[in-house]
Length: 140
Image (cartoon, rainbow, N blue to C red; front, top):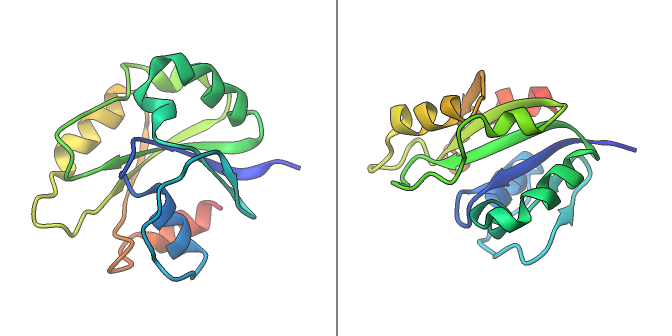
């Protein structure tokens, strides 16, 4: 049975925290060491995006999901999503910008990078304030 979504993003981008918020679990930071399957979401380690040698793993895992979500931390000055990266997937690809309520957030920069990666729909969320969480929950 296919999961609803696979989350792809760097270490610390907020993938696991987003899952905790969507699941109404206690939000506790923990490093994702391996692929984790949740009821509707597949959580991938950040290294899968950070190291191009693992792109094949992301593509293979995506076959088990209906939606691929590129997750970008709005406080990060780094971008690991290659141009038109979304074209590698047969599913819908959306962008999720996290940490939007942080004082160092640059949502415009994050959205620009996600759009260059081929994303057409972008959601802005804050796991801590709950902003935008409902929109992401609707696509699950």
